Length: 379
Image 1: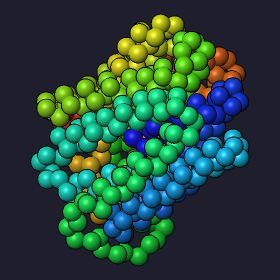
Image 2: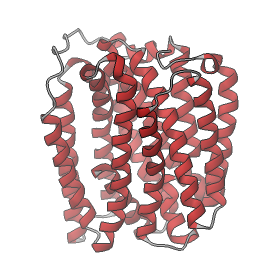
Image 3: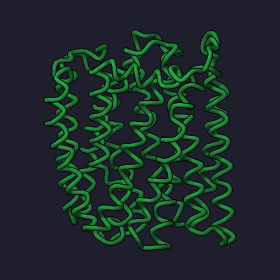
């Protein structure tokens, strides 16, 4: 909730200040660069130290960062570059927190229930994606300081919850840090064509098809609405996602998961294209709902394959690489959208991305035949 609510508020703050879509792309870039630099270090750290402690430290730093932004906006001394610094700090925390918490899940859930746990975890996260952006948009209407202060409180709540996690078994064994151990996650994924295909498919699909960075442009200029509409647009994919993830938690995917993943990513691309040309807010919301539901199928399949095919002692490093792929698709995708919107137009930037996503699905079906053939989530 804290992360997503602050993301909406930061997007609106930056665009309201500069009115330049390129700056929205820079927000994504400054989130991505720390993840690119720190990913392999974060994976090694997650496999060597208490994963709960790592999550706690990251969430406390995120809380302090939101307090810094809130005070800067309140006092009027925070320039746009200062916002980018705060975004970079959040990116540093995400580089450590995301793979660490993902690696923690299998150690506290029986292997036989991991698929349902991944779907349930996804539904909880998507619920936060619903509440967070909605609160970010609504609270911004009460004042530009309010959503950042609320985000700080949310991060403090998250840190309290991490403290309450029961210690997951024995502490990881310390091993010498070598060049090979740091990049062991890359080598492991490269040796598994099925895992490589699933992760890279999701990365390129969201890299090309992501329209999140341009939602402030759609809310203000194309759909002719305000901050409340931005919060609603940001929330819509999460609503579709939580409905689908709850369905998958109750009725988990059992067979033909590879084909279903390819179809889901294709539908994601089609919904992106329709959203690009929509000037009706109801149709736009409907496409975002479908887009979110389709993306969830891909997330559950990819996450389950990564967790079930990776040994415990390597989950930190493998999830760090997976997190880098996800970060690339999300943050670098926002940068891609901002750049292309500045060159073409916001509508063309989103439409071209959706068409590119469909092309990636067709290409990946040929390049990674294992994706078409995989039957179960255990690979």
